[in-house]
Length: 171
Image 1 (cartoon, rainbow, N blue to C red):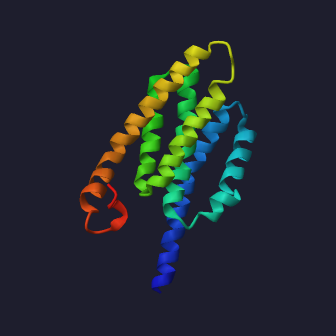
Image 2: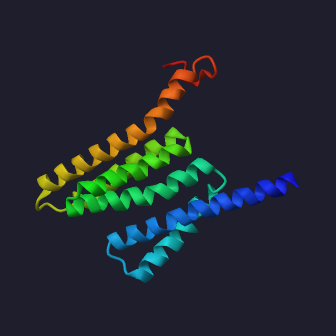
Image 3: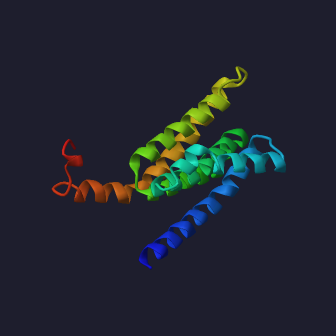
């Protein structure tokens, strides 16, 4: 009976994470100019992609993969609308991904966000300097808030891990 209980719990957790990710996918598609049908198709494609489903058993991946569309959509809106409040929300979305507990995935998510903003916002030559400034401002705000949300985890890891694991021996 214990394994059935664990399976039921895992399915509930997965459903909760996917429910959190769906509005983010829709918002990202809408931000990029898709209508309601296009947003629904984008959400289905993302939610049923082989990469997402293939890593569904890795809980840290689900947390980061569910937060990344929020971070991208909000950061994209922050640059487009020159809205610092959206940058703060993007930082909170990416910061929430730190609770997944796997630093490597979070670092790649941050790099993906930076690459997305650079590719999507810096391709037009007109007003390149102003857009580059806003991309830098948004990335600075997102990075600062993410680090602030990640700080307790990093502190406890660097403080408690020496002597417990050799993974921090070089530090």
